[in-house]
Image (tube, rainbow, N blue to C red; front, side, top):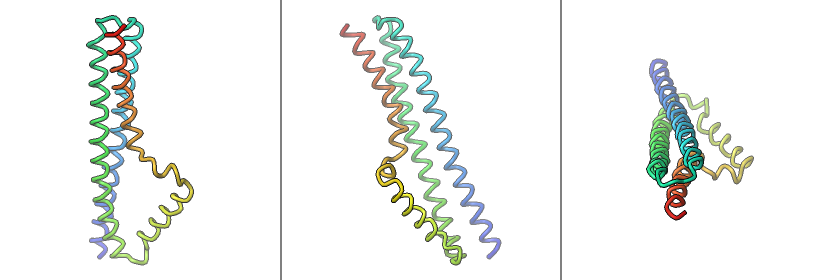
Length: 149
């Protein structure tokens, strides 16, 4: 049983690490999208929204959409590794029932829900993707403004 437990612990940790990796990648990509989008939006504004800025504004719209898409993909991959890690944790809990892993986790989640009744309903991935969508919206606003002004 010791070998089996070690393998399960290793696989749990490997998936927890991969989940963390996807979260870090999502953060880095979002930072890059915001940095690039902000710089381009500043340039468009500095150029007084002249017609020549329209392709750049359109690019900013696409950039924000790409940021949203890659953020969603990293979220999907993160959730995938969470589900796999959960399966390994459940198996460990069955092999070592005195550890009461599920009970401890459930108790911790219950306390968290009581401590943060409103915030715990706000999903973090929604906030991450909103940042990229705001870049797209700003690019679209610049594009429209450069057309109607």
